[in-house]
Length: 65
Image (cartoon, rainbow, N blue to C red; front, side, top):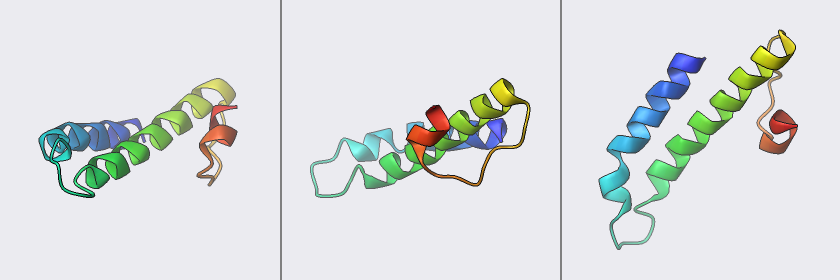
């Protein structure tokens, strides 16, 4: 899971130049990929804190708490 989060993070970095564009929605792909990375990082922290498998949940606030 951590490796997948790292891959999403790397993909986001590669989309950074495109996200600086001035057309509508040009930052959308980077934001989407970043959101996947953040969710997976939160799930990794959940596993480290609880030592149980993460819930099939996409609510960041619930994962963070």
